[in-house]
Image (tube, each protein chain N blue to C red):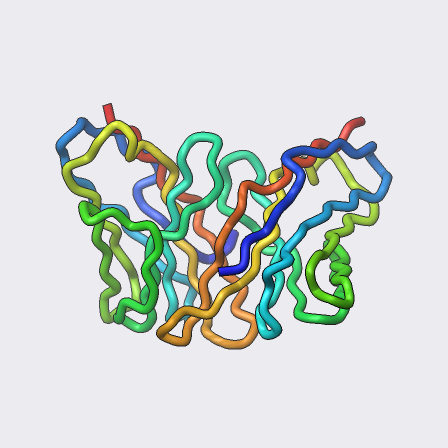
Length: 113
Length: 113
């Protein structure tokens, strides 16, 4: 299973862009990168995912390097409500053909007023 | 609100006891996943069911078992409880496919005294 490496914590000023890096150097060609966040002890919330191309939705942008060994989640205008633990996940295929997530320890993002 | 429900919200019990956690997936989702999150730890994948059948196993102890019923709700049974089993237990559901975003429930907080 591909593993991910993230910095344990980051600070970001409110209104600025938050750039959260993730290393997944052992990713396979057909494995997707997913990002989730967890606010306090709530259930994780889906943010975005991608395979090769950069992706953007209403919450964030995902930049994946050409070799796919790393990616960056960008929150364009961070607010205090974006304070959370952000998980970068490589979705792996199981032997039965379904998919599973392997969560790492995530990055604790603190947005500062 | 993700559409995934979990009961109970909180559970306090003693060592050696057995408990059952319940999860109802989003309408239409056939896959159910169980995760354990101990204090200050990331999420550990336990087990996945798809349409009533076990599909993938993670770090699930032999004292733990799960099942998915014909109405697609799932139960996680934890027996011979130990202090170290105290954790948040999350259920997630998804449709299977190339981009199976997982929707997480609010979790059950288990405290073993």
